[in-house]
Length: 213
Length: 213
DNA sequence: CGGTTAATTGAACGCATTCAACACGAGTGG
DNA sequence: CCACTCGTGTTGAATGCGTTCAATTAACCG
Image (tube, rainbow over all chains, first blue to last red; front, side, top):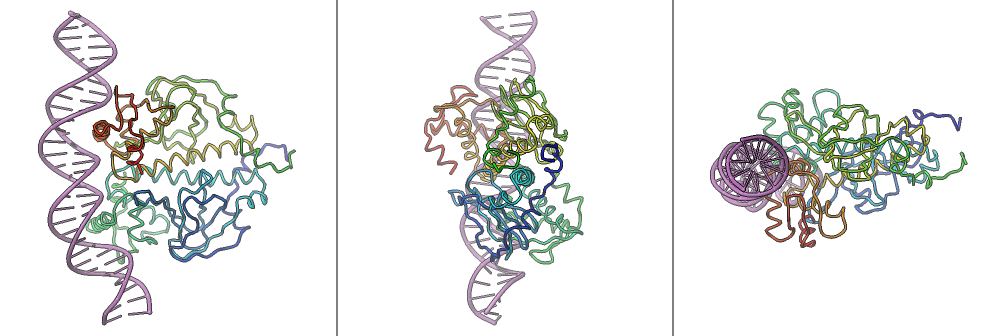
């Protein structure tokens, strides 16, 4: 058993389920810091409830948002010994935080590595997607792809934005005004509809996806 | 030995050195394709000589360059089963290509996972850095940070650009003209000097880094 | 209700893009 | 050696899009 070759078994371990068994839930209030930029990377986190954002402030005061993490997502994975991005509670939320070493001793190094690898892969996929959005020029296209992502999280045509316009702007590399104008334009074209500022409904999926293409 | 807990040992495995022992060197001519977009992810690659670029074409014909890989770099790591980015030989080059399964059977799943994880982390670090460059607006700042990266690869103040202006533009999310203008501006301010189109020398490191900050 | 923050809208500006022309270098053949 | 071409890079001028600054409106909460 110890010598048999079982790559599939090791590969299929899910970090999320591993974390659930360990560590206690911690609550964070809106805008509270979970870990800071340049903090040491010691823990792994999982969102139990609410939404978390990672962000980085450049010297010139500009802010870049790394990503938003929703229920079930694992975050806190970074390549180096220090956090390049800080993590804050976007909404009031609850997260499970476990020391990496604790996870490792609990499940063993092989399983730990496999699980971290899988989670890191997902992280890589997020970044690749984000990269393309930022590389693409048109503001409306960026906003459109963002809305698609949000709407895709829930079944049906409607989506809910847990973050404000400023967060959207910093995520998309735009200003708050441009985001607002893009949204207005999409509404004017009847592609999406906003009953309130944070809730929307997709009216023309095709048109929305054509913008991103 | 099989049951003892040795995280450090497993962690420290380097994928690059593992690859060297396996697989044969393959030559690719300039602009030749190493693997295509949407190809299955089956192999791991290492650059022995020359430079490789990864790129992705959007439906609207726009091209985004993922990264450039130099001598010693490992590439071909992608989160999903398919390659989102294609890989091409930027210059005539030589790469080692090994089937992932071959690597895994050679060193065992634990070491394989550890090694792939480490390489994936590096990949993640590259992307995070790239993300910040694209999120930052100013064209000159993007070009400056690119030049710093290139110049940092070789000791001393001079650097060599293996890629053309179009590749730089697609990497930085700019047009070829804007890249050219930014370079001219940097030369005009005597921050860098270009004896030829592909070779440069940094004159004022401080000024260059201030632009990026 | 006011009081505060967030979001939208307007107008002017600036920077990157676009389209176009020109310069440069390398390679080819007269 | 010159003329020619082709690919690549630079430069110019005009446009357009996103930004910036400012004012207005909407949403939230006591």
